Length: 126
Image 1: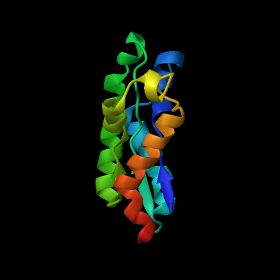
Image 2: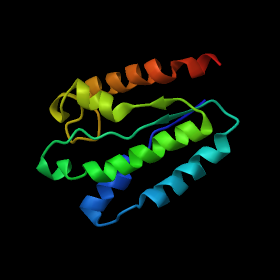
Image 3: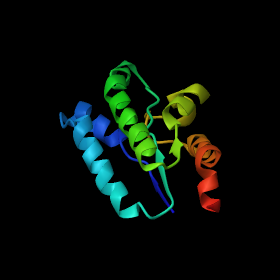
């Protein structure tokens, strides 16, 4: 089984290094990760952001495009999708779950695991 959880670095690098990744390039890169595993139990996980400040609030549009790509590919390949962005944001703030907005603390990791199991746990049993 393979779980693919990528995308927030592509967002982050646009803002901290002026190194944008278009949604089209992100989709091509994600497909390249998926293709070797099409005969494997596969799960796609949305990237998430818990904005820690106003600067990170501005990342929302960029992140939304990456989330749309992940959702579309999950549907296309017929694999489980873990809707992490909305779940994390509904559960708390960066201070609660990911102090820098991106890298989870223990509580954030637990929420990711619980969310993964709720949405993709059945794939383990297939």
